[in-house]
Image (tube, rainbow, N blue to C red; front, side, top):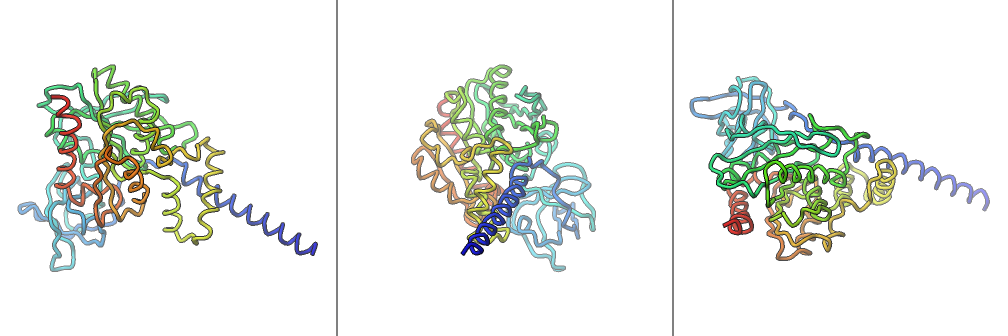
Length: 387
């Protein structure tokens, strides 16, 4: 009996060591700030017809095959792929193409997909008047793109765009033509740990728990420098988590006319669960692994275990109108928590779900639908009240 007891204690101790070690490993992946990177050049350009505006690519990438609109990065420049995909006689994918920046590629050149499409400063890739400004933040100056439509008749309302984990300021560029059309100025702000921005002392990202202070800095800048009186918040993925944290904590919430959340991170627990299962972690091991990961993360980075569990904090949100979009095939941030979040908020939210669409690709999959929903929402909740 004693030998059996000792064996049981030994197995329990060994399991504890294993789970603490696994928790440390996954906490490193969870906490280490993900910096935006250039898309890997894993595709190959096989034919270019500049006269007809056509390009052929050898690829099985679903972003090239299935998305209506996407960017193609090459060493020479940036190409807009638009319209319906066609299969070329040599087995490649043929797409309509337009040069956004730089030069056309040559056959044989490597290329990479840019889901943010207009992957560069707005003046270079979209032809919109923009400038880089410095926003004083808690850790230092944050670079931001200031974009003011030439036809803007007022600048009392500003749109603040916050990108997601591993994204960049370019993530919100897909919105800018519509904002320009509606004469709404915007500020796309970099966050701590972004290129050109201050680095968090420990190099950790905190899923909005700390980053909301950078959003607050952007709003403070707009109040002081631009005399902004009203704000529209836009958050992509983790940027949506940052936006929701701002809405619960900022003293400037009365300024916020509306919020737009794209593929929002509503539950960090559910997201970690999804990603663990996608990595092949056996189902019974996922719950204890996540408990260990969250505990280690809390100790290492002072990360509150409920900081990005926005379903638990719905009652603390102000009555700010929201447009929420999510693809039902999102394999990065699950759509289930978003559905429950929307149900909890009821009429406060306009919810648009995109069938068969992956993470932050709602606009790419159906730009006409996304832009129509965006116009209608902004017209009702921002422009009409502006008069």
